[in-house]
Image (tube, rainbow, N blue to C red; front, side):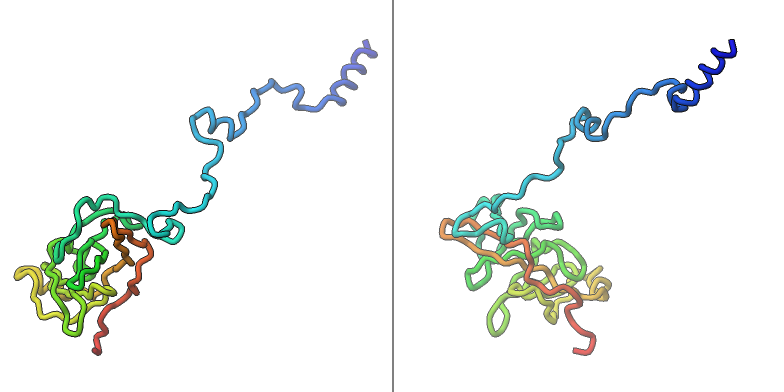
Amino acid sequence: MPRTATLISLVALLLPLHAFQPSRPARAAPRAVARRAGFAAETRKKKTKGKKGAAGLTTDDGWVPLVDLKTPVASGEAQAVGRNILGKPYLVRRTSAGAVCATSCECGTCEYPMIKAVQRPIEGGGDEMVCEMCGAAFNLADGTARPSESKGNPLLGGLLRQKPQKNMLVFPTKELADGSVYVNINQKTVLGDALDEGS
């Protein structure tokens, strides 16, 4: 008997302690679990060269076609189409000079939609848009705020004019011979306060 007890104690010393514990099933690797759940093995698509559109405009350079624009843009009329990188539509209109321009859809001051904003020529060339709610005016060429005599909405205009006036976003736009319009997602407007208090 002493010999058996010695043999058992020798075996107990040689075997690791976890060998005496009940076995657990092996954990599945996280990738295997994700694949069984229906997720892809890779999270990103491989980068490819940008698609070349008409007239050499590429998506790598930020140019996107406004495919929602079904009818030609008439002078003085605005159409809200597409989506910019903020998820808001572009406001596309034709200037008095005949060029197509794309701006943000909301006013830089009160954020009211500018779809029905009055467009009028500026002395010295160019056009401006005037918000019908707060009366703020913006240059269509670069989105800068302009001094305005308009009072806007008689009920809320005075209150909304007290907000700081910011520049409106303006995006580079190209119209091709076939009437299709391309917008660059990189705005050309300098953001920030539009009019200094001292001027």
